[in-house]
Length: 143
Image (cartoon, rainbow, N blue to C red; front, side, top):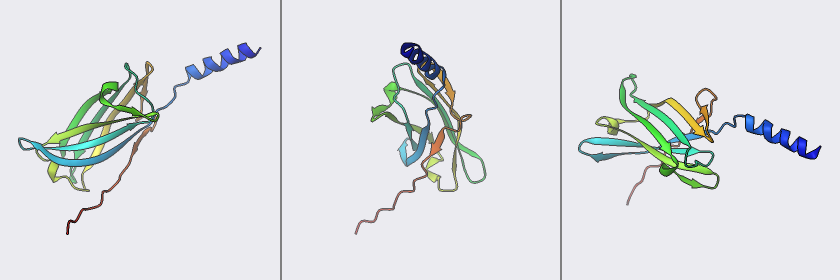
């Protein structure tokens, strides 16, 4: 009976899609090269990424009037992240000539966030598993 119950529980849990949230944070914007500016977006995936796991992430940056100023389409794999303490940490970049003009009126829109984890695909936008850490850094002053 105990073995049967254990098998039923394993079957039940393996059939459930366990949602794995991600958190995004604009880390910095800097001049990259040849007139291009780059906005770095940090990604925390709240689970490890194994060799076959992937995160498909499409981002669009718009200015305060809604005009697109830059975009990125990324496929993040285990080679692109550091797996630490049960989470995966990575970074993507949105690059354009206009990106250095970005201020707090600009918006990063998540157009696609699909995680393929253990062979199961999760649309993180549909399951509301995309979070934003809207951290605002302090300014520096050197005396």
